[in-house]
Structure formats: structure tokens, C-alpha cells
Length: 214
Image (cartoon, rainbow, N blue to C red; front, side, top):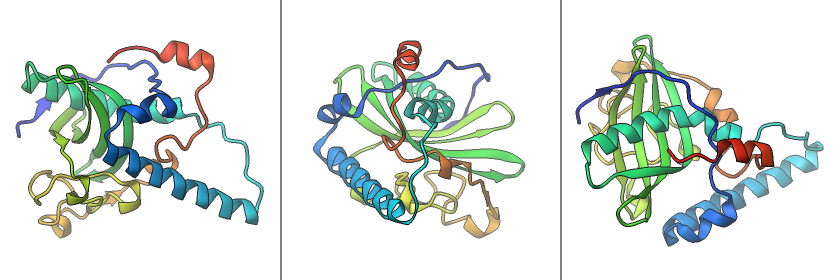
């Protein structure tokens, strides 16, 4: 699990596939998981709407994805460099959580990526921190069945559904072994991202700008 140091660079907006386009391409387990999350989100919105009328959202799905993508790009480049002949292309960032540790930003992220060899979409977990340049500590495929993985760590809430590798030493920050010693300071910004496919769709202009293969 070697680290890779990558140069910081500017990234263009990212617009992922629509839910209707992506859903048939996912495994059955991922489809069921996503549909369950969307159903829970819809129930929450209905409960909130009874208390007060919802405000129009200016937070698009494309904006949400673009805010996570820098971490994802660092991670997938790290993975592809170490797996020649078994490379993947990013399909959709799922969720990220971050914390401050030793004066650095540490990020845990899940995303979907498509195998160039089999064309199948797989879920990934990555741990990235910045010193100040990005350092990818781990980027691995989360193989099914998904229920065997933990959804939380010392700074990732379970309801964000960021699946973590099995074993307390598979990632460095927020694992059970060092939970007390690390004294993490979770950041709350990720809470405002929203779960995948819960933001308003991107505009046609945004989609045109964002259609780029990474």
C-alpha cells in the first residue's frame, strides 16, 4: 500500500451519467442499495415538506460531483498506475467525508468506475490526504457482497454509506486501532453535498461543458 504524490492541478467540471442511464449498468446489489437510499431520501423530503415548504435548490448534481472529483481523480490515477492492463475510468463520485489530522486534510471517498477490460462498473474506496500536494494512501475495489464492509469510521458517518475496507489497518486515518490517539477533527462540509442523485439535475449547458472522459 504505497503512497503516491501527485501535483495539484485545476480540474474542469464533471457531469456524470443520469440516473436513468446508469441504473441498468449497475450490479443488482448496487441497484438495490441506490434505490433504497433514494427511497429514504424521498421519505425525508416528504416529512420536511409537511413542516415547512421546501426552498428551490441551486445546488446541482454536477456541482456536487465536481466538488468530490479532485480526490477521485487523484485516487484513480494512483490505482491505474499500479494496475497496468486492469485500468478503470471514473463513472460517478458517490460520497466523501473529511477530517483534519496533523494539520492536513484527510479524505475518505467512494466512487464508481468502469473497467476498461470487462466494462463492468465497480465501487472503489480511497483515502487521500494533502501535504499540501495529494498523497493517495490507498485506492481499492470494494468487491461484492457489499454488506461485509463497514459504512463508518472515526470521521465517516454511517448514513453517508462510504464503504471501508475490512481490517483496521487497511486505511490509516480514522481506523479503530488509532481512533483515540488520532483525536480527529471532522469537518462538516460534506454534509451539505447530499447523497448521489438527490440534487437537481445539471443544466444542458453544464452537461455540454462537463462531458469529458477521465
